[in-house]
Length: 80
Image 1 (cartoon, rainbow, N blue to C red):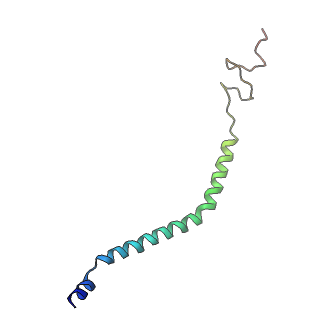
Image 2: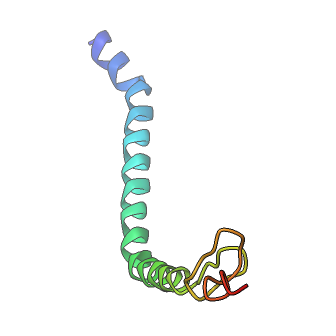
């Protein structure tokens, strides 16, 4: 009977149960939060991507797509 009462009085397993319950709650909350913010984050990422895609990058100040070696428009090169 002494071993049974000693087993019932020990609390070593209770700490493990607390960790399991706490970890399960944290994982469940994370999954719930991801489910709630996923659509908003996707929409925001789409808007950012569209904004970045619309930016024109010029070569040495040329933004019309033509590029000369010295930064001048190719329509002006060779007119001397």
